[in-house]
Image (cartoon, rainbow, N blue to C red):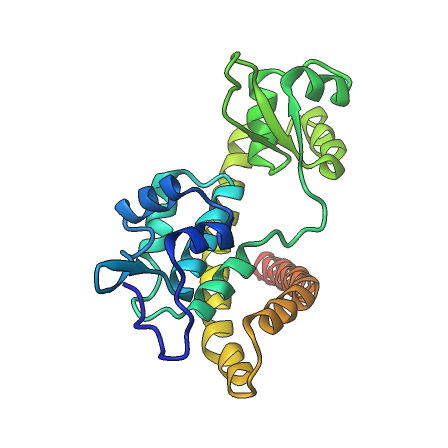
Length: 246
């Protein structure tokens, strides 16, 4: 659903909306037909668009940049609260942005093998994908296999292959990380939506201010997660030693 625009909100025509988000009229209409964006707001015989429409289209673009399929985007958008404001949606988009400064580099399979200094088998690539080092992309029109590669982690991943790390263990670990990652992401989003954004909103801050806050807190959040993991591992080891000594 789209929130009713306030009287002081400037509505956009379809052409103005397309210019604002850098999208074609055809794409806007397509996303509207898939319920990713609400229908235009009618004023007589004309249709207009509000900040809700802008925020939702920008969210769709952000999800696309992360490789989400149309089906996955539809599920994500469907999970937004019915009363989500443009600020809520902007916050969700900000939290989706990469937390790692390094961006993956796109390579063909041949380029990846050259970078690795070896021919990588399908099983090797499957393991590297499970380890979060290599991300398969759609084949090109000519059938060329392409991948996104976390270059800084490639040496570590190759070292794991050399040590014979089981592919199934890597896949199980990837599933575990994804499951707990979704839980953390959901809870962190709710924390920002219910405890952070209201404070800044009451102070008259803009969504851009919240975006800057999120960007600055990302490295602190990563450090906190690592510290929590290390503390939990230490506790787990202590508990394991205590059980064996009984």
